[in-house]
Length: 424
Image (cartoon, rainbow, N blue to C red):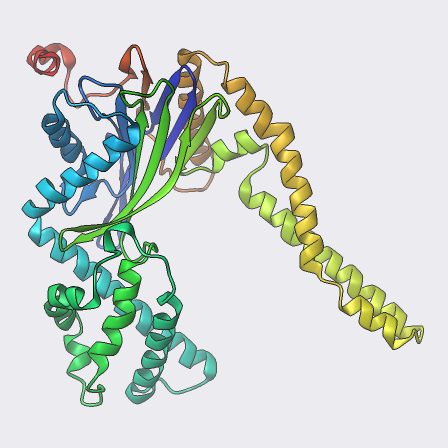
């Protein structure tokens, strides 16, 4: 897991990231503390990138992908930061994916297997709840019901940009062998319906082309800095999951562009609970618990009043009127009031202060929020999924990409040639 925090105002943008990485091996988790998550995207221009989630792309470390893009980019610049992100994803599709053909097949196989497992598990669970014997016949019937349900559910879902023109026929041409191999045991059953594979492919296809990321560990990529024509910094965050048949499942998660209207921003990524508590004055989980408790309380109060009225032989019209009161609307009103107070008393005040911070203070704030997340994980019973050295970098329009803190896997004094190459 990861803790990354970005702080941004008109002077520049700072990012801090821990070094923890969680690896799953044979259903067990191993945490290491040497992962790199902040990178220069250009040696010559004020652009950087951060990652969290899956640290590999089709088996190739993202760190190597960024370095290859940096070599390909050379001294080329683009008018806006968003242009850099577009060029990066074009580079990914045209120059990286064609070298990772096997990785694309493996990537898709994981998704197909994940969908099959989910359908089977849901079907078994529903049969148990219904008190129906989980026979092979009953299971096939329930699986077909679930496939039909998923088809209807995703038939109206938004599509990822890269899959807008991707037809079901094209998907079948690419994926049929993989799907048949994953389903071989199911298809071999004597009672398997003859059209089962077609029933399976339709919802699978709709899920894959949608903006919903499931069945595989995602990567979040955050581009940050300045375009050539931009005087204020910005950041753009994207989620990437699957990549196959020369296409990338990619969605824009969030963004912030500094301007004369938008002065500053503090944005946590990955494990956001501690940073969000500092920004909002309350933990998001605790806030939602307050809202749920409020709704439960006023519902109990209403029901007790109704019981009292019934015992007093009150008119049915009054009781009916009380029963018709919508508790959700009053809970929403309460939540809106609380959220407005949080916005005015905490978020706005913090952002106003951040808008005047120096670049050094921006970096210090980002690093402090990451370290606070690490501290919370360490002193509680939660898994210590944040840790290791904290890397910190700042980008300004004039100075470009500047490391304030950076770990190396080698002693710097023994490898002067590395820095000579980096500066050449």
